[in-house]
Length: 437
Image 1 (cartoon, one colour):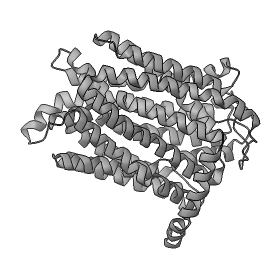
Image 2 (cartoon, helix red, strand yellow; image 1 turned 45 degrees about the vertical axis):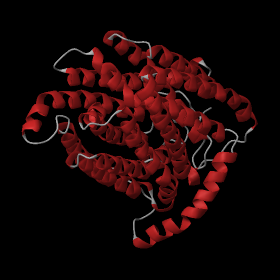
Image 3 (cartoon, helix red, strand yellow; image 1 turned 90 degrees about the horizontal axis):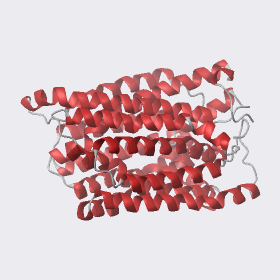
Image 4 (cartoon, one colour; image 1 turned 90 degrees about the vertical axis):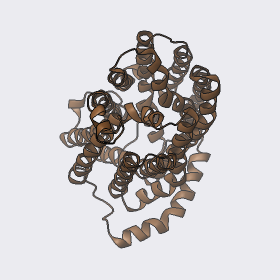
């Protein structure tokens, strides 16, 4: 199994497969980036405080938590593409609800739609991507090609963030004249991007198995309880996967507070009529630095002799230390620099952790276990948004980030259990080869 290789060394079919999904993820995350830069500001404009925003965001996590596993099992039963497409429609419903209704209840409903969309989409196309790649290139590992997909998504987020900030500043005042809010224009543009991405997915993402028909859907739902039982048992009893899930949950608990409050934290530092455009640029730094980190994941892993668990320990502990330092920033320029380094380190972690997770799960449970991973992330998010949201409102965002940094360091130290456990675990059998360490 080749862990390090150049993209051009892959078979032509595998390269085409990677490029198609990379652009799909660029469109998907690019549309989200357009709205990400204004979401918290939009909610504040409508009169919601930090704890209110924490409750709204926790609704997203709670909805995803309720539906992740059943819908992940459905994806394993009837196919990944149809389930993902339903998720896109749920996201569009959330977007339209947030755009046309102004109340707290509407915001909660919108984020519930987003959570349902997350439950449908997670564990679907990613599983399809890995399994199809193995079919086209059975002798190649997945760290580099997972990094390429995450790089495409991060670039989409970065570009979308700049566009979203510019749209809010330059078209926002005109939207107010028409009876909308200043931050509604980016939501409208995201709607258009979502439709384009939906058409692209329908036409170019090809899935050979699970023809979509009524009986397949009925059988898929019927088989969900069995799929769930086997996958849950596997995930919580597997000595490697269970440790990864615990670490993932703690990381999500900590970083939800960063992702939701950093814009509110930095806004008072900016003295400009184009504050949203500047925040858009900072948001692009936020996501672009993740993309840079993703591109360094394979080389950094090589420095640790491709011992992925050891690499992850170093990266996660370092990110926790930087997060604590981040909470002390008071100048926008220092803030931007630390933000860049923090997310570069975070980006380096993603493909390594994903590869290690994929290595230890079998194909027939892949979608469901990816959904289980997402459930753990959302559970951590709920605790983080309610607990750290309260801390941020009462004691300040910087205090919440200090606590988050300590939690991240703990999540990295937990992984010290992995090397010994991995050495004693049998290799998981896949249809087409196994991943690298």
